[in-house]
Length: 330
Length: 246
Image (tube, rainbow over all chains, first blue to last red; front, side):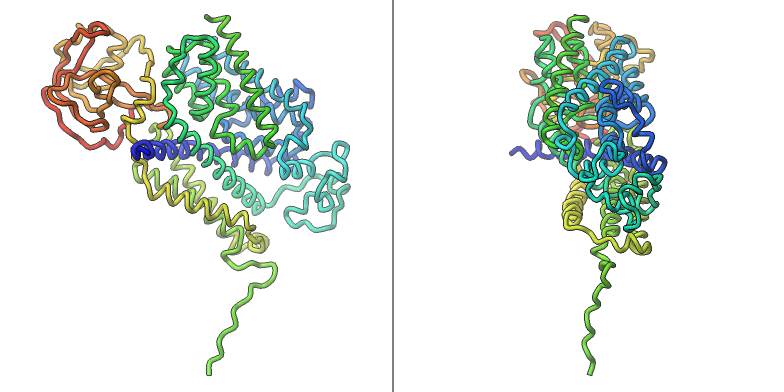
């Protein structure tokens, strides 16, 4: 194997990792702040559970909790743990990386003379998020979410939604995690106002979350760096002018490149002139939902079946949106 | 006669120091902090990320260090935190993270720019009008490329003095160009920009950094009339400390 190429892959890996780590830390800090300020997540449970309004409300949360796609995985996990309706949490997970002030500003900075893109990107992100939330609703929660997340989530949900049998560890109630003892049964735990975690517990949880996510991020960055080094990018951009092929190629590029949603518009700018408008939008829509760097992180929330459905659903929705844009703009 | 001391058994409920989960967490967070702070200090960020992100990396490193110190302190002082025993899984995370962070710290990045650029399409950013144009001898390679995009007529620049630096980028089906990498975020989105050169002798090896002095000339080729650098002096230089251009 060519050693120069391996050295390039190592440098790309370091670039991706060092760029993403601060954003991951921001996400973990936001998630810890949410645990501190809204310990029981009562306001989360009041988010709408309507199939469409739920994801829309989750998407709107992006404006309040600005994190790019690696940072918003811990925040979305915290929403789910706090008992937010599934649709709202998924809406946040998939749309917030685009629907936040930083990303919208960077898109505007990169494409100030393409107003249609400034409108189409957030609208497309909401469409994709609502579509994915509707799709994933078809799968029962127990088969969609990872086991440990499900167990924590069931502790927060009201008893009217979760049976006592499903609430593993419910005898200890919330106090179980921080050594609260056996004094409160599940019923009293649910009726009692939620306890704010101690600072030590907050640091324990946040620290462990960062460490677990960082390792998954490493895996994703390694994969993205290797694919970028050994698959020439020019292959993907040679089909620039063909309407459907160009969309598919740019979707594949978004999967591989794995840059943060806050800067991907600047990257898209470098090849915007070579590809169709639909393909350009597809690149800007798919990357924030799913890419190689994210696969490991999303695996922390979703079981493989949910992950596969997300990839397939997002791919199909983005392809359709790209086609509509090409019909309109070409 | 001295009696051998019996080994100290950890009291049940309070694990020995290496087994305390909080201390392990503190150590791991400190390792990640080391990666970010070391990268900020040793100049490698200049090779990996656009300058706008450098303060963010250093700040994240400092924050992680503070979090690590809090964890270490909790593991030593706080009764509940000190009683938490590290799981086998956490031990594994410790080993993998330690190996990885040490590798990142010990093996700095040394990418081949020519190799990276060969796989990327050139930067095609349209510059519709440049508000400020430097005199020819002060223009960097990137300035020249941007200027040529806004004023594509090569005859406007024929005979202008040139003083630029860049790396040698092999081109398929032609002599190598002198090039730079433009970066908007990190190395992953680097895109090359280059200028054709009429090399006086055999072209230098790929990736070699050069400083060229000479004049611009116009040649007629298969692609029509184009501007080419006619070097009168070629100097080999080390890779600059900040090789990436915004």
